[in-house]
Image 1 (tube, one colour):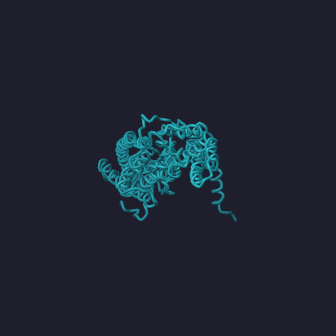
Image 2 (cartoon, rainbow, N blue to C red; image 1 turned 45 degrees about the vertical axis):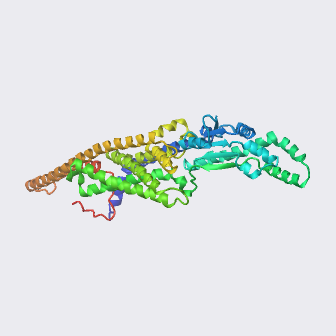
Length: 487
């Protein structure tokens, strides 16, 4: 009894191809490892030793008092100055005549924060120490510090706000170092009468808490979702456009749009669809930001402005994905989309002042400019970067629109070639079948004349599939849509 040869033939076939299979797996293994290693190394590189670049964040200091408290601030900064502390730029009262001018400098984006000594602060403190004034009132008016919580909220809170508080606390320490002995001697020499006791109590209270600061946060941004605004929310629009592009290409293939409509009509159709889709997508993105805003004080007008900015951003990415999917083969598409997403989010994950200089080329990326626009909207007009952000964004849109037009023409041209190849393939198959039948009648064989045409048929099929993939790929079948809708 002979055993079936099927198992043996499968094993022999596997023995012939296992090396090729493992080689292909190894290549995919290596390329994808390098892809993620390279992209994540780039992203982590933006944060490499960022604490040593905190000194690149500028703080403004103005002394409207010109006395001991102002000098205490400078002494405190001298003790804190270093790579891990923001740089304090002292300006004269001629350049900044009032606290409003200081606030405007921070609002304009020239400085990440500011601190100034209020006029007469030292005199009021001296009066409190002598018992002649209300110590609490005088102490609370000594310093004012300003920062913008909407500008990179996580970094602003950790690198700006916390260091301003550190500077204020150090100012108290330096004040004590300069004046503690003299004030204590004055308090100890005070008489013991009831009136003097009350005066001494007031002076002692002022001495224990000599300098208190008033905070002015241009835009308080304390909600939990703030950490997502410049990270995940930047990446999602790119992924969203890629998925929709695959669905749109799948529908175009089902309905054979590139052969049924001329390039102009296809271009207008894709433009209309992309405009509607990105408009609704932008509305959804801004909608969930607003839905989870908690107590964030933003208005309906700011909602609309954010919607328009995100709409432009999404449409830019739609055009970029459209062009990439036209010219880049599917096997390289993950490399393009992932790299593009990482490059964009790396440009917004932290301020460029905190990143190595190499990464500042990302000023040219749409994600960075979108975030600059959003910060201005959220800050009620502060941090105005429209002079650079809008030209960059619209440049991307114009170039993307022109490239998408060319890409659509190419898709239509390749789709027509694929359709012609399909017609030729069917006609050739019919001719070969007819020739095969005639040959079989002449020779008495049912296969002679058909087998030689199989190789030609296989080559024609491969070419036809290649052209169709180039025209309509990459794509996936849309759920709930009939597969024969375009027939």
